[in-house]
Image 1: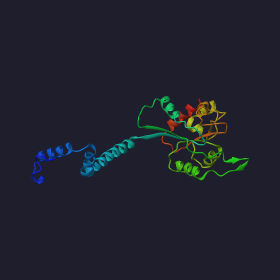
Image 2: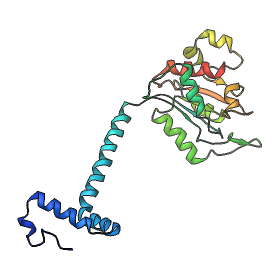
Image 3: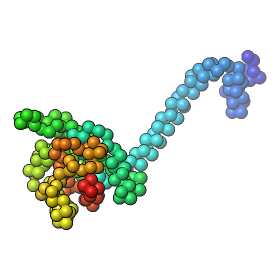
Image 4: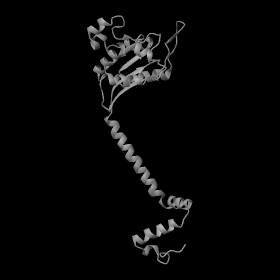
Length: 226
């Protein structure tokens, strides 16, 4: 289709005339032709715009992540169910409404009991590596675990909180049936049983001394043993 600009060289056109020419070209095309035209002539600006948008989103997310702080990381070993609601309920119980505070319950580790028919059974290598890494990196605050895991860390002097130091003598006296020197037996916790965190096997709650928020650990222990 002829246009009033065809006889005029494009390099001689004003910006206004170039825009008018583009409109006339597009008006004469089908929808498919318009799409092909836009992709052909504007693909690099479009790609650049998309990359800029993703970059901005990434920067915003990165800045937002920097504000986040994990107040409590609990790893419940040998828990087969997803019990994510426990941390939501716990947060509500301590009236924490800060959107940047995170409370993590990790139920992804399964090692078995460590024994079968009175014979030692090696713990899965990948599970053992994660368990060790979480402690080595100072990530996990609490393990809810079978005896074989508890005994591994009970041997290391000064790694676990003594329950009397963490919770106080009054707590130990009130819960003397479940308190060990550096662990709490919590397999009978109604809260944890109802959520699939514990079952009939012995389950030990141990807290690590390197934890940054011992007051939150205390609140969590009170929450699960009530």
